[in-house]
Amino acid sequence: MHQIKLAENIYFLGFNDRRTALFENIWPIPDGISYNSYLIVDEKIALIDTMERQYIEDFLARIEEIIGLRPIDYLIINHMEPDHSGSMKAIVNRYPNVTLVGNKKTFGIAENLGYNPDKVVEVHDNSRLDLGVVKLQFQTIPMVHWPETMVTYDETNRIIFSGDAFGSYGTLDGGVFDDEINLDFYEVDVMRYFTNIVGKYCAHTQRAIKKLVPLDIKMIAATHGPIWRTNLEWVLSRYNRWSSYEKEQGCIIVYGSMYGNTQKMAEVIARQLSERGIRNIRVYDSSKTHPSYIINDIFRYKGLIIGSCAYNNALFPNVETLLSTIEHMAIKNNYFAIFGNFLWNGGGVSNLKKFAEQMNWETVYEPVEEKGSLKPEKFRMCVDLANAMADKLLSMDDAKTSSAPV
Ligand code: FEO
Image (cartoon, rainbow, N blue to C red; front, top):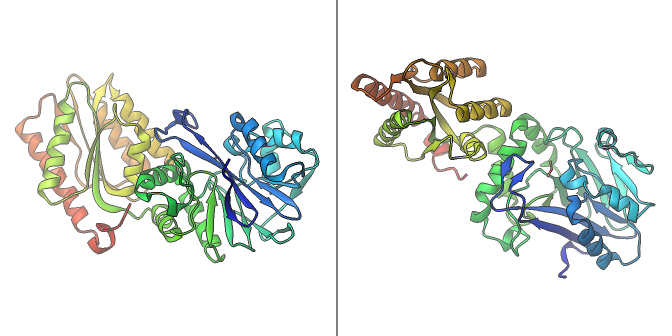
């Protein structure tokens, strides 16, 4: 097995998951995902985070390849979610004298997961751990994205082991470091990982960035995806922008439609936006596209237009699922508009209005609701709705938004 090193005696231990279809059993990962753990071999040996438990045999074997019969002295737990703590018990069984390093919240979660380790060290902000040559320090980053999340900073090599922060979906297909891969392949996966997993906690992410940026960071080693050593600015600037709800000029139109009448309204709106010069337009059928991708584009683009037919006097169920995901994620800072259709009773538009009120989102135009086939009056209103959205989008500061990368 090739040994991949971040620095002298700091090893990458990563496993590619190409089989799981849904991360956290919710989010599609067609490109898979990697689980990254790191081993520091010094006078003392420290393992930073563990692994999904399905990889435990290979994980233990790879550790032994590196350290032979030496014991692991410390297991540092940056994050207790089972994709990283799943092999914790197995590590303690194999290395019974290992000391677990976590913060005040870490061991409470471990206990809730049915585990009460004996040998623990509780750390807090600026706590230090001396491994010999390598000196570590710890910084908590609560709610990025669990309460116990923290980072471990190697002061000697200036590497930050960042847990899920700055992670990505997507397996590591040969390349492990950012300068060994085509970042274009990871662009959407990095963003989708942020928006799906961390995006609910933007304010916490902003606080974490402010806390970590003053550290002298040469490398960011996350628990998923590439290790950042050349393009730190690439990922840091994106995290900063996304967690500030800074959005590009563009518009998402999402609709739920059984027989195509609501879809026709979406097409009219999309065409008019295009006529007005909006270039980033994405139309999504809520029955075809998973909310993971739609949420991602709502984080990316400023305009959001949602349409729903009525379904049993209520919203179209897939639109309802999307709305509940948006609400759960507490997404902010979009221009919003709504439309819909019904034949024998309403339920689509009326509930979209309630959603807008609940979210405290201002709509850019009055709701457009048609009965069945699209007739001239509502056609014109769809055009006007698109014009109102285009006016808002075109008034954005182009220099700041339209040319911004993902
Ligand atoms: Fe990758 Fe939050 O666990």
